[in-house]
Length: 290
Image (cartoon, rainbow, N blue to C red):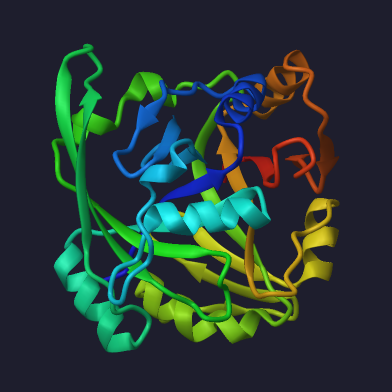
């Protein structure tokens, strides 16, 4: 079963500073949440997709990787020691056990499912328990990207809040997550199995994996520079997640919101591009819907 884009982690060393940047960008950002294993986050919600702003705030609580057990905290800690930027890509899971079996059969993951819960707030402010099951996968050719599928175990309105999805920059939905690799086709087999999608589109500059919610694009460094006018992340160690393409409801309002926030940006091929030097290691692209 094809899996749609669910969320990404934007992992940095200073969560408060990153949160301030996203607010200047015109995003509505949720309150700080604390995981029992040492990471803290703030959430930026779109329609069915979110950006998890993340830091390792309590490193003493981080559990080590173990045979058959993927440590979310340890991955982000190790990523943060080398980089800042987009670290983990999560797809939507409707059945964590089935996805775990599928990843194992495809040879892309053989990890225990990681289940956890935390308290959240409904739109009316009432408390509710949120539960998630994470099923991890691994691409040896992309060691600096954490891949997993995420199943939610709670009523839809317990986590997703329409009020949190209203942004001054008019961001509405995820169009694509953009990866960069020296040889994009090297990641074809893994991404096909990870997304549960066989219809991979190939071109001279890379590949595109369509999903029920947005696409996964993989392009080479030269194509990334041409498309977005900024430098891609270093891919000497393998593929990296580099950019988010976000659709906006009103392009003129998006321009106004970024100007109001004093955010350096450029217009490129009919899009607004905020580079990694501004967005702490990530490239954020705002484009008209349709």
